[in-house]
Image (tube, rainbow, N blue to C red; front, side):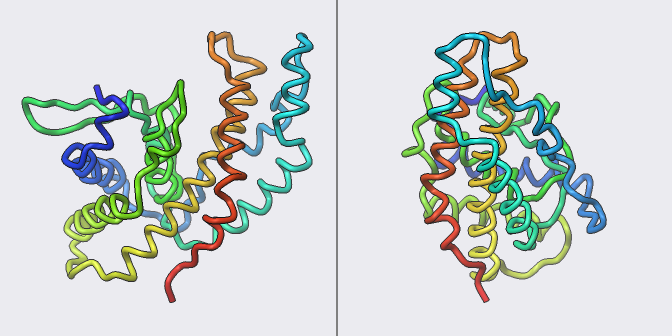
Length: 235
């Protein structure tokens, strides 16, 4: 099983794109299919108050209001749909614990497909990059550098072209386009899991600080949004 430090190692990290590609290429892109990973319809389930006063105070002071969340959702849905990222079958939860490394055979496999669905290609990759920060103790200084991302994405695009028989070299424009798409969807990933955590905070019986996790994901969303939104798809 992969640990967080494993995905940051060059050799391990660069072996993953081939497997991500296999997952999606089995169910090739269908342009008519709309992404199915849509938590927005569960907006009414988001926690707005708790029985204990400490949690009530925390959600009022540290979590964006429902009005802000609704505004961000509407803006994000419109913006992301215009980026041109293809809709493919995605895992949607590629955290390190869901990656099994067979050292003897030299390959990796994914487990736990409960969140898998058709979704934007760039979401799956951006979400995986966010997982470099860990789970219980998030450290976003570990988010992959531009250099590492470009190296990873180049392997991915080359493998994609081989599989689809589209051939040819990967152009700098193709690489930069995917880089921008992935980072914009990484931003969406923060919002999605923050939203998810607010629902879990209200209904889950698991012993985990979901409210605290939501705060961290929303904080990272708003912290990085200006820089990420300044990125432009190459002409």
